[in-house]
Image (cartoon, rainbow, N blue to C red):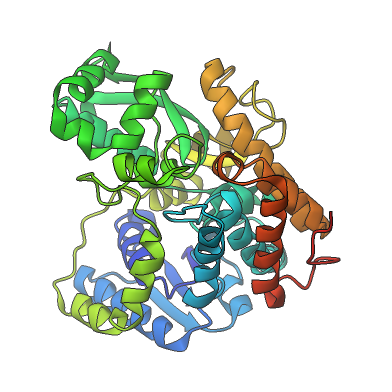
Length: 445
């Protein structure tokens, strides 16, 4: 039978094009129905053209459905991919610029901390609406989320809809593994690893090359090769202190803890001088969004003129679908799931990122046990802040959002309790139209 895969937020051009390309490379999906759905007609049409080019170039007997009706896209779907963005550049700017007024310097702001929390608060209503429609129109579908903030969104969706097969995917795990392999001259096919923690702050608990511990080689590369040390200043400093390597970029990790962005001199030292694509510059992604506001159409048209690439990429989604409802070839990946007996020294029920096995009709997460104590301590702070934020969203309690922000490592390193309260109230006011589900949007002393 023809399989159906629905893209919700298909206007995310790069994600949609690459994921469709990957999906159609599998024998089980060559004739799949690809259902593209977005609320932005112009972006949806660009995605439609890209998928048409892929189908034509690959001579696939696939069917393409393009719609602005979410129910139509989801009806009978076997797999669902979520790549939405709630709100535009202007409201995202408030996530960065209001904390900046209070000297909380943000690099990306889409994962945790006050910026990530308010992005989550805006995004969770449509995400839960998507889940409700999945339950109604395709309750057995595998739902893969790519939308940030990954951990909080997955935690909320999984708690409200435990009967659905939902997990979240981030390419930082395989991306960083490839980076580390490159540093020691290893081929990825000769590398294996066990990685666990929370999204964007998972750690390689072991990393082997041809069956041997590769951490001594990684350590040597970081400590003896200046270009490697400089390429990931924040992450390399974290490794030297914590003894395990973290998955997400230096820019992101600089805003997840109290060590690198609390003073201008530290920002200058660690967050501006790097050969990495994102060393940690202030408002890095916001500035990119602003630049693309006037250029995205031109860039998209140029991308559509280039020859179509049909070779499968490194994203996990297509392989997961193939394992669960395709050729049933078992596939292991790192996914975001609730912590029901997976990591023993992180909060029960929080969202963790652990190895997951995809197989016929199921996703099975792997028990990790205890994280090294220094990693568990770091993860606990962020995981518990995320738990407070999710509880605040699901109950409409603005005080829990304040509590989540006062314990955020970077925010608490810079501001007093009263200053955090004022900042949170400003962020509530800026997001007022998105937060009608709160009982009150003002935190009182």
